[in-house]
Image (tube, rainbow, N blue to C red; front, side, top):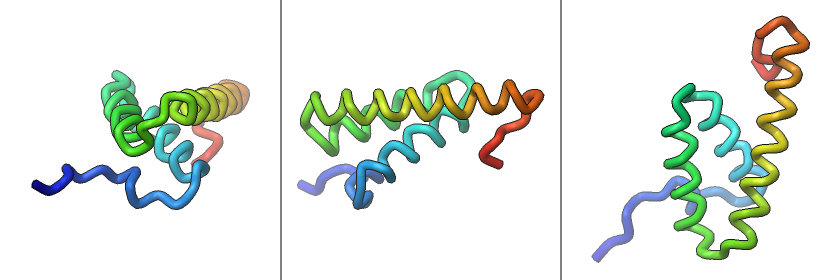
Length: 79
């Protein structure tokens, strides 16, 4: 039986995973895309400590980008 597709299996670094989580956060205002991305990361890693660290890094990056957006009058600073 084949394993279901998981995009995180193709990432080569923690930075790529964090970027994936951050982009998923900003792609969906309801947060469902981010939650699914977290599931992908958890399934791919299988290690709760690494998962928690990467989610923490993504939350830090999200907060930084949202702060920059607010300071820039609501425009996304990364665009």
